[in-house]
Length: 104
Image 1 (cartoon, rainbow, N blue to C red):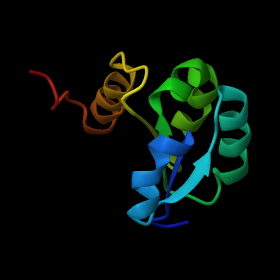
Image 2: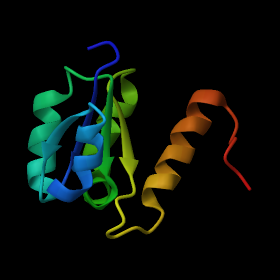
Image 3: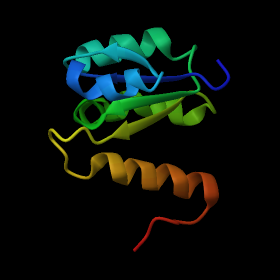
Image 4: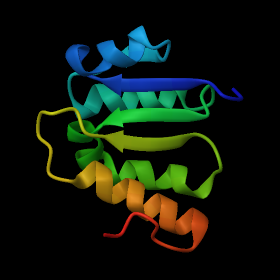
């Protein structure tokens, strides 16, 4: 698991990551994303999750906050961006570092 990264999202949004060597898992909706996350959580240190899938899975994703791995990071994909991914990243960094280093 150490250092392994994955991306979960729709086919278009994961292609760039796949080209960069990140293991890619397609998921077209939150139900499929939940299934994929359950299946791969024990294998990866970092899992990127398309923002449009992360928002509806908020309560499900909270269970991963209690463990050091995997770190699940919502990322914007250019589809339904509303700042959710950035806000979740800011919150995670503030918890880890004790200070918000991304504030403007």
